[in-house]
Image 1 (spheres, rainbow over the protein chains, first blue to last red):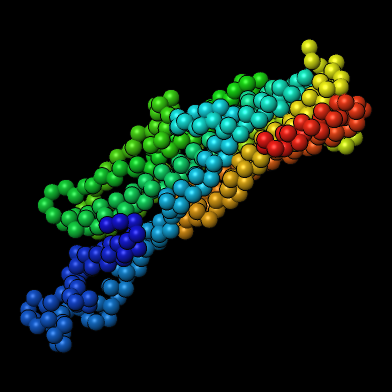
Image 2: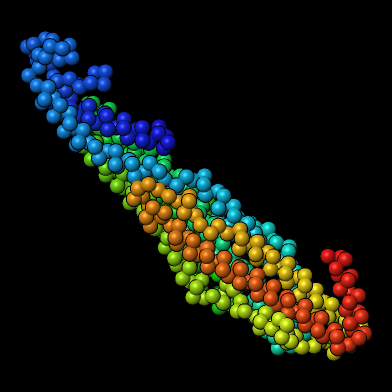
Length: 332
Length: 116
């Protein structure tokens, strides 16, 4: 089985449930895609042979089949909710774009604070040092203010912007892992439910286990510290993918729960399938909520502490052709 | 305080900071802002009630943060460009007050233009 065949397997489970239920309850059997009533033990001839020797009328047969089909119809809707899920491969493009953004902000070689990956220095940004050394020599108030408020805190602010980029990139990576595992988990449920329908009437206990790996797909990082100035006291919410998390946060990966299910009838197996799917839905919801919470937390912090992420507009920038106050060069 | 030739050198450096160095840095911030995806809804759709936040999950929360960052990057780029323009204006304007400084300033501007 694979996730791409989920719709087909839902139909297979439904067909199997209807067929086995009808046989268990009424000894109605299926042959070549048609349902037949139980043969009269004293009659001999089969219903399908054209001569009905069953105690069950055709109307009764149709009613039983109809009732069974209605009884298990919800199997389709249970699996339909998972038929279209985000495709893990689709996250690679946006992750690459955010990485380009992060790389542009590297005033020096930075390390991703969430997954620990290295990012090379962007040598183009050394132009800021050249400009800073020049402007530092001018004693005008606007020039000095630009130096003090823009150039000196430039590296810290840019690093903080890099960290926000990392939060965005790792959120995408966590989404990618979440949907990769959700697809595997729903496929596993379908596979095991189908198998349980094949074996509930065997001798011995009919039980199966579903591992909900989605639980460990998203790692919540409650407080990612920033650097420099007032931002030393601020922390941002973040998430990481369960497989790309820095050692620092590895202890925060939640263990994968193994849920045991057991049933000895068609209805019991389908009830457990419903329970398993609801367990999976709950786990996916909790995992993605961690991402929503981290993004909302970070947006709030970045908006509340704006000057830790972007410099106030320099006076010089507004002076333009209005006699910019650069003062005089100080060549001491 | 420098005058004449030395002032011309200082003005050329100021002009270079405004004309070349700050715009170069601004360009990197523009590149960073442009690289950020503005929307991820297209890759986040799910057909049923699976996950948090409806049919597009965490899209909206993610895009809000990306929008804030993109805004800060664009603002940084704009501030750098406008500051650079002010420095260029200041250097050109200042040079007119000292003939010797202006000669050296113009010579160095041409030189900087060649080596860029």
